[in-house]
Image (cartoon, rainbow, N blue to C red):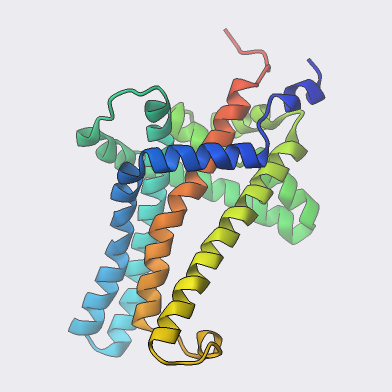
Length: 252
């Protein structure tokens, strides 16, 4: 089978976005229920500013809260990877254990993600194109680590095999999907900020000139909780589409 024939089986960006929206809104309670844990870093920061001096609270906000946010986002991504095949198959979701299983997968997931990030950033520092190439061929390694329980090396090899012969179509879907979802996120943020500013009696220029406030931070966190699962679902659906149309010979 030629690369073009393999590529033709891949759904386009808008089809993937449509599938993402359908899956998200069909199970919004599950995704938002888990994503709600992303409020925890904000609660920790608020508690620190109430309990400690501004200097200590700022250190907690910049250190502990941000580290907690990274861990929770990674945990949520692992959950999405584990959830989507179950939801698509209409299988029962083991809520009592899936969160714990995701926590146990944090370290291998983070190790693979960091290695992929190092490869991507190294390529970007050298030249833009090598960075985009490396970022694309290794993009799905963390998903393989979680979904198939592969080692770091096997996950990297599996991601390369998954994108072989269709690197540009995969890159195009990753970038266009990210741009469209980011535009929706930005539009939602601007709409909320405009409404908040107008209700407060300020001019529209205050949206860009006024310093970040607690309300702005809460709005940002709420939008992160709402939109972040959509990015993760989109990535997982693209992975599954690549996997479904993969014709690479498997070892027996």
